[in-house]
Amino acid sequence: MAESENPRDGEFELVTLRNGSRAVRHLGHGEVMHPSVGPWKEALGLYVDPPRLADRLRQPGAPLVILDVGLGAATNAVAALTRARELGSERRRELHVVSFEVDLAPLRLALADPQGFPFLQPFREAAEALIRDGRWEEDGLRWELKLGEARAYLRGVLPVADLVFFDPFSPASNPDMWTEHALAEVRRHCREEGEGALLMTYSAATPTRVTLLLAGFYVGAGAATGTKGETTVASTRLESLEAPLGARWLERWKRSSSRAPHGAELTPEVETRLLGHPQWR
Image (tube, rainbow, N blue to C red):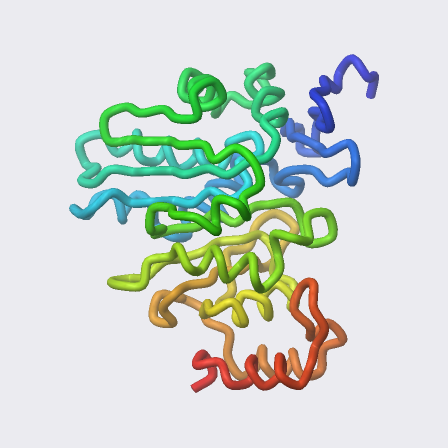
């Protein structure tokens, strides 16, 4: 593909996937955002529809808060806002999306390619306001940007999250976001009462699930997407998981060569903590 077909902005470029979808690639480590089925299908199929966002918004209550960890080209955030706007008068509660991002180049690239990212166009003014002002609102919808390292914001005060879209680059490329300490910081902002909170992420790797368990979540299997036969859902309440990990997963973990959490060693203390997790009781 000629370089002219791959617009660039800083450390990112636009690429075309085999299925024809446009996506954003990091020039340094080479990772592509939403590489398997394209951004829009993955956003809906992994982050927005499995937690039944539309149904939640049909129920009266306090504003529903989403922590969108890894804004990227804003696909996950816009997918949630789209579902909310589609409900029209059926929506009975407000939606508040809080997006975290260190680099807005992917969003700028996506907005500059309306044919490749048509799903962003209904929220083009919203995204431009987010870039310019750090926030956007319309009736019942609010979108806020936390620009900079997410860990700094996670150590502070944030709205209590009902849903977490956990979509940073992989542990290999962005290791600091996948440690037990980082995920425990995310966990601290999650709702405890009622249904609790759900966290969705694309990684089904054993170290990811181990780290989520150690960080205080209950953990289950998530929806399949593209080439991934399984993703991961975590929750503050075991009852909120449709497919919680059980004895079979624990036995596989005991035989696995990848038993340690991300960014740490498997010590006897770590093993004891994992085996003593209330999920197995």
